Every structure is written in C-alpha cells, then in structure tokens.
Amino acid sequence: MATVAASTDSAAPPMPPAALRHNRDFLAFWFGESLSLLGSQVTTLALPLTAVLAFHASPGEVGLLRFLQLVPYLGLAMVFGALVDRMRRRRVMLVANAARMVLIGLVPLLAATHHLTIGLLLGLACAIGVFSVLFDVSWMSFVPTLVKDPDQYLAANQRLGVTSSVGDVAGPGIAGVLVGALTAPISLLADSASYLVSLVTLLMIRTPEERPAPPAAKRHLGAEVREGLAFVLGHRILRPLALVGPFCNFSMISVWTLFLLHAARDEGLAAGLIGVVFSASSVGGLVGASLSRKVVARLRPGRAYAVSMSLIFAGPLLIPFASGPKPVLLGFFVLAFFVSYAGLGVANVVMVSLRQGCTPPALMGRMNAAFRTLLFGGGSLGGLLGGYLAGAVGIRTALTAVAIGSALMLLPVALSPVSRLRELPTKD
Image (cartoon, rainbow, N blue to C red; front, side, top):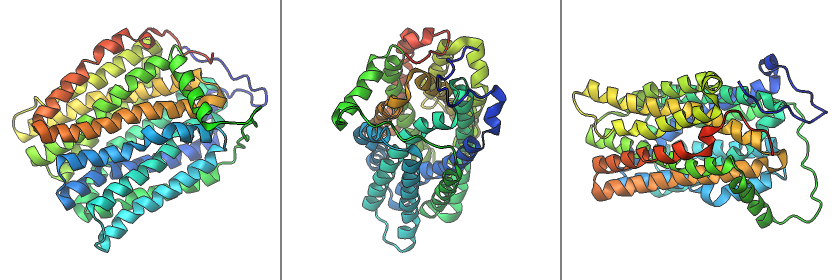
C-alpha cells in the first residue's frame, strides 16, 4: 500500500507501525471520541423525533431542524478554522464539548419542567451546531499532533472511522430503545453524559501541543480565511474532493430526513423499528471502515475513492421503490442504507487521509474548516430542501426525486482526477 512521505519534524522521529496502539494519548482521545460519537447518534435520532412525536412537527419543520443543526458550518466554519490555526486545539475542544454537554442537557431539563417548545428546540439545535463546528475543525487538526508520523494517518483515521461506524451501528438502536422507554427529550441525557466522558479523556492527554508560531506580519482574519479557501480550491487533489463532497452530504442528509418522515408517517414504523433499521444498516459503515486499508491497498486510493463514492450515491435508489410485507420492506430499507454506509466507511478514511497528507500544519485548521463548510453546507441544504420538497410534492415523490438526483452524481465521480490516483500524495 502506498503511503505519504514521513514527517520532516526532526524533533519527533516517526513511530514504527506498531506504535499507534501504544500511543497512550491517541488511545485516550480515541476512547473519548468513541463514546461521544455513540451519544451523538442518540441526539441525531432523538432531536427530530422530539419534534415529530412531541410537537407533531410538519415536514418543513423537521427539515428546518436539520438545517439549523448544520447551517452554522456555512457561516462559521471558515472563521473558526482561521481562529483555531492561531490556538492550541485541545483547549478549543474542551470548550466546545463543555458547551455541547450543557446545551444538550437543557433539552430534557426543559421538557421535564414543561418549558420546552418547538421554537426552543430549534434554537438549541442551532446552538449545538455552532459548537459542533468549533469541535470539528479542531479535532481533525489535532490528530497529527498526537500521531507524528504521516505514515500513520491512514491507520489512525481507520481506527476513528471504525469507532464512528460502531456508534452508527449501536447508536440508533440504543436511541430507539431510549426514546421508547424515556421519551425522546429525556433520552438526550445519554449524549450529554458522553460529552462529560470526552472532557475527562481530553484532560488526560499529555502530549505537548506547540503554540502556533507568531505571524511575521499583523494577521487579518479575512485574509486568513481567503488563504485557506484559495489553498483548497487551488490544489489539484483537494479541489475535486471539495466540489463533489457537498453533493454527497446533500444526498445523505436529504435521504435521511425524508426516510425518517416516510418511515414514521407513511409506513407507520415505531421509533424502535426505525432505530433497528439504522443500526442494522450501519453495520455497512463498520464493514467499510474496518476494510478501508485493505481496500486502498488492493484498489489503490483513486479506485477505492471512486467505488466507495459510487456506493454512497447509488444506495438511496432502493428506498422509494421498496414495497411488500413489512419484513421485506425493512429488508430493502436496511440494504439501501447498508450500501451507502459501507461506501461512506471507506470514503471517509480515504478522504481524510488525502486531506491530511496534502496539507501543511499551518493550514490544517483552515483546510478542515473549508471542507466542513462545503460538506455540511450541502448537508444543511439537503435537510431543508428534503423537508420542504416533501411538503410540496409528497414524501415518496420527494424521496424518488432525491434518489435519482443522487445517482446522477456517479458521472462526476468517474471523471474526477481523484479517481485516478495510484498513491496517497505528499504535501506540496
């Protein structure tokens, strides 16, 4: 398997391949993130179900909820990325996770005291999204601090991808059980507690994080944001990744939003069964992430990217055309998401490794912020458009239109120069 070049940092000699599992600080970070991601899966399902079940939200309101969770990436990711490049990232992550712990914990508190309204729920969803942006642009930039050798990026990202997929597998099922037993708002306590664990593990990390070098001239935030965007859009590998990525998230989020409405309203599935569908299908993400390094070694990075992205875009076609008895219907739903999640499990590892391998440390925060802006911007629009399209033409018709549009993205994936890469690139 091709790898990126070794680090030129003479103060930190490259780790041998086996050293990653002996890297105490990376393991602490990995453990905390695993529990946090598992808890986040509860919130991902419980927040919209709170809107649907507790407030009888319309399709437009459900779409607006998903939009508000993700729209902070559009307005804030690049600004936060520039600021994070000026700071020690662990401190930023501590602030972000503490804020998310409190905000998510407010939902069950307000519900228990009968003060929760649909307006407050939408506002809290947006506030949680703001601190999710801050954390996301920080943690991806923090991994190279813990993993000094670029040759280990793929292995580190695979481990994070596998545990993310484990959360995808277990989370919806746990969420469905908790929602059924405790109601949707109260079930969010699990996610709030997971952020507390993440705070503890971040505090356990002892790897020194160097203070960013002072600038040679006075910094201007706008200029730094433009520099980050220019780097991404001017890079031969990052540019095509950035152009296709938003459509991937648009497809995934719009299909997810429409399916939730379709399953709950059209098919009459209980919250527990919806959780089972997401849990069973998310095994695909676990399989994809677990096999990602082998897939890259066998197919080369470019072909692995092309195949995995094709699975993401083609999988939704199975959902709107599913029919038959309930077990058959559930089987089609599981298969559709399984295919997409399997592709996502591979694609995430490949794309994050490509991005880290192409980007110098001084631009890492802004590069990640540019991608978060584009990826989650696409996702936020997917949730918003999916909800309003369902209100305008019906849920099943909207699902069909989105699935066909998703499949059309196979052409730009096939034409992308990333699909022809034979090895992971070095920083240039």
